[in-house]
Amino acid sequence: MKTKEWYTSEEMGKICRISTRTIERKRDALLEINTELDWFKMKTKPYKYSFKMMGEFLSPEVFELINDNRQQARAIECMHSNGTLEQHLSFLEWNYFITISYKDSLQKEKCFSAMHEFYEYLNAYSFDSTNRIFFTTEPFANRTGHHNHFVLKVDMNKDDLNAFMEKYLPTGIIDIIPYDYQKAGIFYICKNGKTEEDWDLMGNKLHEEGCMLKALKLAA
Image (cartoon, rainbow, N blue to C red):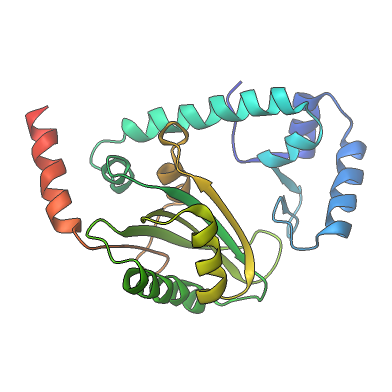
């Protein structure tokens, strides 16, 4: 099964073998619990449902298997995208894949600058010649405001990093997971394309590492 990011209720119902009414009832129940849940596109019809919504109707084992296959397919696609930024960055070492959904409805400029400020604080607190961050700023699908996805290379454990983010970033829901090279986190971040206003890459030895990677590719 070829998976994608967004599905109509009919498409999701066919995959999960449930009625569209069941999907709508579950959607309404989830939004009643969390009005900021970004699993739905409801500004225009037909409404769209995130791939994550399948986890509400499939067994954990089946959903995990589908998701793993989906992410590995993305990783293969990423590695065959020769000359792209995401392919280049996939060769670098990363520790964490992180999403932060801010409580307040931040404008894109504020959300973007929050990442720059965070990295400056992080670099001052835990300076290392290999510290780096790659992030994107994206709008929410179902509410006003923006959020950030980013990958990070830093010498900090997860608990310390979470506490640091809570201190130096605007209040929000923080999701930190170890970076998994088989799941193409870089590709996920680049999924919607990029403009100069919604992404950035910061690090201490980017030029040197870029030259090293170029030399390795030419030698291959």
